Image (cartoon, rainbow, N blue to C red; front, top):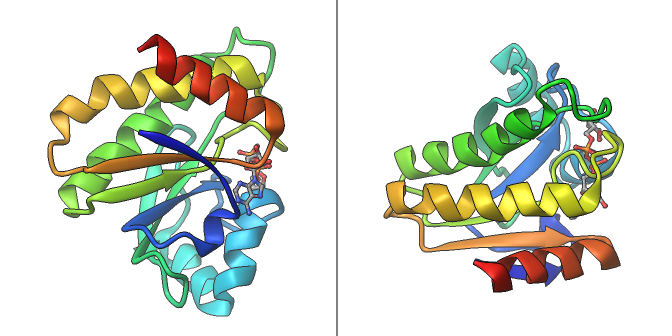
Amino acid sequence: MTVVWDDITILTVGTVVNAANSALAGGGGVDGAIHRAVGAELYDACRALGGCPVGGVRLTSGFKMSSDYIIHAVGPVWEGGDNNEAELLASCYREALYLAEDEEITTMAFPSISCGIYGYPHEEAARIAVQTVASTLPECLGIEMVTFVTYDQDMEEFYLGELESL
Ligand code: APR
């Protein structure tokens, strides 16, 4: 597992993970960046998928992006922590790994799901991300590299701290 500061839309990996909404309708943040990078064909592909539940994931091609695929993950909106947010966020990471393994994808890049518009506390989200990926990877032996892509100074420190504590 590694941490990088970068724009996820330019990474050359098997799949990037998108922080989507349950309608898969595109939006701002990383969802907006990915949709801007691909264009209308991604919107059409997402619309054909018919939505995705919170905690779930869906796959599309990466189209003209440098990643072969996009895994759209729907993170929870932070509502104070008593609404199963932690399990739903963990589910995004776990299901994305399972899906990548099934599709024989070997390298993945995750944004900080739910840490922007959805308001998830950054330190707790970084803990969930690293712990979930670390505990799921032994079931996904085809996955060779998982990269946590950070866009925020604090997230990089939180990710690195969690990786050191493994
Ligand atoms: N590359 C990498 N990370 C990015 C990028 C980018 N180009 N753009 C934003 N981020 C980071 C943000 O700084 C944040 O840490 O991605 C993280 C996730 O933030 P959001 O994109 O706001 O996603 P989220 O909080 O999960 O909210 C999802 O926002 O864009 C809409 O349609 C989306 O409704 C959904 C909601």
